[in-house]
Length: 409
Image 1 (spheres, rainbow, N blue to C red):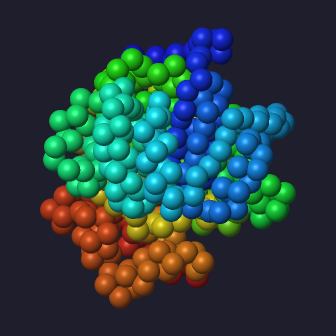
Image 2: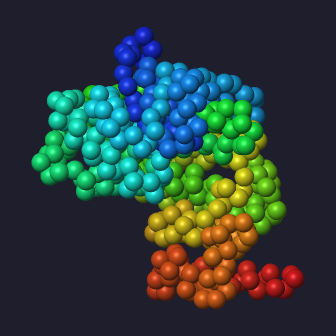
Image 3: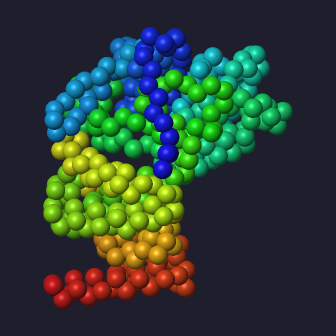
């Protein structure tokens, strides 16, 4: 499947341009900042954390540590400054003259930034700037472009709606770069520094752009982004979660430890092959290319230098067991395309049994299972109907695992 093309340009072709990024967190600093900076843009972050704002403005740069088992390299993101997220007047003025805008704040924070984006677009139009503005949305939600557009329209006077549809592009992306949690030691050394894996490609929704395509290193302009969004969810996210939940029950702390366990690696890949067969049928991915994609994911999961933890990847099992999320969504897709989700079922049961006492959602899930039973959890958290085949498959497998655990103890 020809899902897109990666554009690469010599830096000598770039002009001085300005990119504004809502959010100077893991993806903002650890991914977007690097892509924009190395493509010749001035990078302006909009951020709540005052220590990050102060350090970025003091240094006008920050280091990215690119870590892998082969060693570590440091890339310095230059031409950087930051604005406090509470400074609405300054933000609207900056966006009025921006060449590109991006968000990396987390799905739950999008309603909070929609009003200032609407105000900034209105000010941009009122000031006479008729140039197209594309909003690159790096949030973990399918159809993110449509979602943010709807939020912004709620705060934009109707007389601007037509201009918005003509001039503003709402560009969904598939964020796959892994960025571990910043350690306390790193924060003490420099609160703006961050560590990332070497992978640095960002698929973007090509048809969503307004005007000429921007010349940005690492952008993969995809004609069929929904196919890549589903592959991200049912391969990358599902594989990560399978590995984490299997790893938790064998007592591992880090993802790299879990994926290097022969049994966990085998079961994780088997589950991904089940969802993969369905993805290939639905989206016509080339089987060899998809297998190479899965092999590359497993290789990336095993990156010791990232130090990614089982607890971080497995956290909030209730959300991850939602109907359209990585566990249940993968199994439903497999069944839809005639694939029996044998190992995906094992992963679902492992997620249902994820009882980490330091994870409040895991504690809540175990309380629901104990007080209300598996059928209640499948109907409410997983949004499955008792008439659906997956409902009985999970219920039977879960009860079987509980009986086996009682016998073994």
